[in-house]
Image (cartoon, rainbow over all chains, first blue to last red; front, side):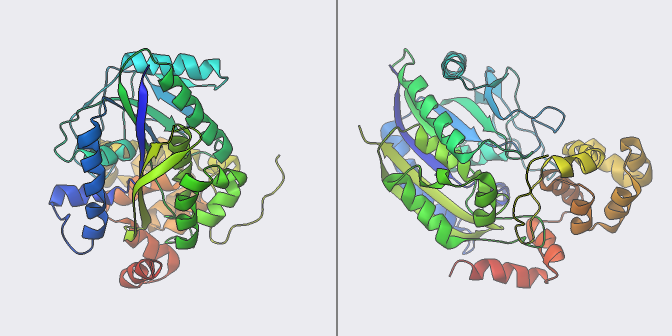
Length: 279
Length: 115
């Protein structure tokens, strides 16, 4: 059966794309952020995953308010990104993994998750930039399964529900009849707010507490409602639910292999964690 | 209707009550994913807004390029970000405008949050 080798959670700020395009990763503003990925890439080179399940949120590229799924699983042969309004370069297309896509879909529905399935799906910066951070040559060595969580139109799925989704993804991968090594990505966060009089809001204390909780008390943040989490981490800080889902996929216990945290990248407190399941 | 939740300072979560106000505005801004649409908007803003059926409050907010007004008119941050992209504005420009700071002050405040 397939094996989850680890989870990588990372911020996905669009400005990262600009920095990569302008090749400014070593400038003082960017260096503390980009340098954080060295150990993660070393781990990836050692572990050599075959498949990446990418848990992320679409920001108005693939989905609009006309039809807004809560949980959407990609089941396409290929995924491409496109212009999101700021002319970020497109990246090479990502190969899908139809076998795992449909296995996930069957398994999650069997566990009473009400999914939207997407046989055509554009992926936005929340998918492409973490992939580019992990594999800067953009020669993707993995097939991919996108799992998109709605953070655009409230009401959002609860943090507890997102954690449970992650747990179910973990069980689905474990029952996938294959020797594949699967890495789970959870992208977004950490604390930030783009809009309103509270634009620029950052909560370092909460972020650090949250990151620490993922190894010692993984469900800690699920005690809070979405409204409470918005108050604590900002309107876009709510993306921490993707981190919760990725952590959930690792099962009961996990160890941290590496972490990085840097303020600011654009308006965002940029976080990064690499975790392995403890079996 | 669900019970009211406590107000978060300077923050309005994009729930159904806001979505109902802003659908036309958000649909227009979603169209700015396409470069051709962005160009067409710049060629004739009035006609573009008419095509999407924006109301007076939304038109005024678009014309003013004012993010707080756009939010008030029912705009969602992710679609408004595409509108801001037309003018080459980044999130610190947007943040400065909404908080009444200069861009440098806004950026300094972000840095200070890391200490």
